[in-house]
Length: 270
Image (cartoon, rainbow, N blue to C red; front, side, top):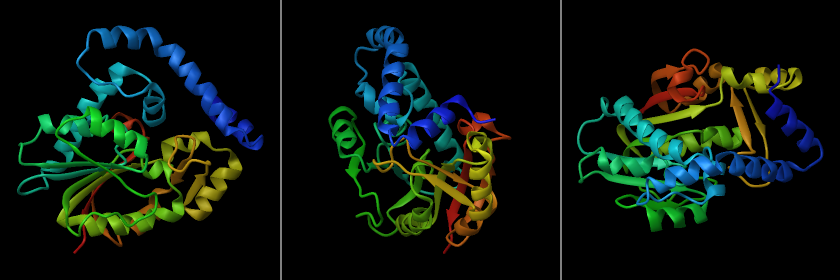
C-alpha cells in the first residue's frame, strides 16, 4: 500500500507543483517542532543549530535529533569503518549538508586526523564554515569529478546521498569515490532498497524491477523531493566493478541500522 506522503507527492507531481508541496511540508514541520525546538535550544545555548529550512531539507526539523542522532551516527560510522583502517584517519563526508554527522568527528578521533565535509549546496557549506570548528568544508559540483586528489581519503561516507541523485549518475560517482580513496580505503553509504518499495505503485515497481533503479526528479538537484530507488541485485553488479563488498544490511531486515535504508560498507578494489 502506498504511503499517504507518497500519494500526496504523486498528486502534486501530476500538477507540476512539487515545490508547493515542499513549502506545505516545511511549514507543517516548522509548526510541529516549534515549541520542542525552542525549549531544546534554550538548554543548549552554545550549540549552533542550522536554519530551519536547511535542517528540514537535509534531515528532520528536530533540534534534539539533529544534535543527538548526529552524534550517535558519527560514533556508529566510526565503529563500522575503523576496524578496516590502519594509520591516521582521513575522513570525507560526501553530502554533509549542515554537518549533522561530520561535526562530531573531531571529538571522536585524534587531532591529527583529516576531517572534510563536502556538499553541492554552497549556502549550507557557508553555514558550516561559520559555525562548525575543526572540520574542513568544501562545495563540490553535482557532477563528478571533484577537486580532491587521488587516494586522498581512507574513509568516505555518504548517508542518504545516492537516494537523491539520478540513477544514471551512480556509477560515475562510484568511479570518482574510488579515485579519491586510498588503497584498501572504505566507502560507507546508504540506498533506498526493498523497505522503501512500499512508496511505489505497481507500475513503478515494474519499472524498478526491469531497470534495476528508478529516479523521481525534481527541479533542484539533490533536494529531498528528488528520490532514487535501487534493486540490490543490480546495484551489486555496479559496485563490484569498483569495490569489494565487506558488509551489507538490507533495510527491511535491519531497520535500526540506518532508518530502513540499505547500508553498504565496501572496500576499494586495487
